[in-house]
Length: 360
Image (cartoon, rainbow, N blue to C red; front, side, top):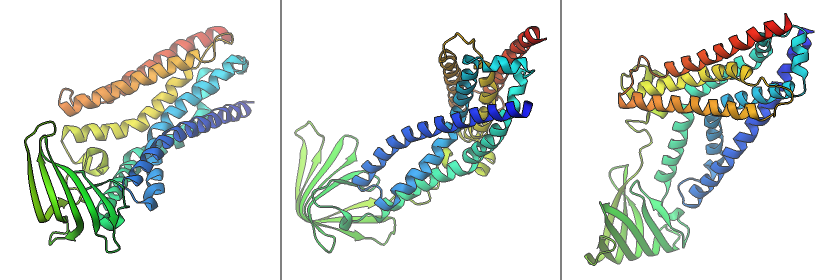
């Protein structure tokens, strides 16, 4: 009988988790797909790399979606069992609150392991790959890739370039360029012809414009300097493929462990905390899902979402406090996980006492 109940509870939770996670992932990927299409249209990303970026983004999303999906799945599946009076019948067969965790562990252990791998290892590497793809696309972009009549951004300064016609050799005719050269100062250049020229520095290119006029000044004022030229070269630095100082989110876990920087310590604790939060949320979801058959099905889910939001906000706030130096790194994010685990233990203790009184 116990094995039958275990398999039944496992199937209920597993299929619900799969459905919830897929739906949430599709929602996020739809938004991401729209943004990637915009980057492709602006020339920031090659068409061939679009699907790879979507796949890498999906892996990063799953780091958070797996825990929240499992949390919601447990509450929805067990909530239905309580609503349909199936759970009271199971408890009458000596299935106590702790007995629910046995089939849950069949799903929780592999999912927590997957989240740990995504959070600690693959997620940061996926983020670094996405950034590298974008950098390679911007480095490889040249004037030959510009479509006539389309504005594109060139260089890290986000200079906007427009060409009315693009010739076979990659040069452009009737060129427009706009970029910021200083705080509040804008440079606008119009030229009859333009071409891209490599320099001795592999990280620097020149946009050479011919027969044009250059306007420089502050928008909204009449103080503009106008210069006519026969030839004008505009240098721009290409994005680096291997930045010397990567963002903490893109650093390897080993590098974070070897650093005493508060930002790196906060990122390291966050990565460890994601699989830990997966386990704590699963433990907490079981007692939170308990409801009366006549009670509303979604009331407990609303409470569960509130608990999840509080948990996430406490983690985010603590991470920010560590980065600012307002919170000790030794206390770090661990106090948040400990508080939620203590809350789960208290609720389980109360429900376990009630269960013994009813079914003794």
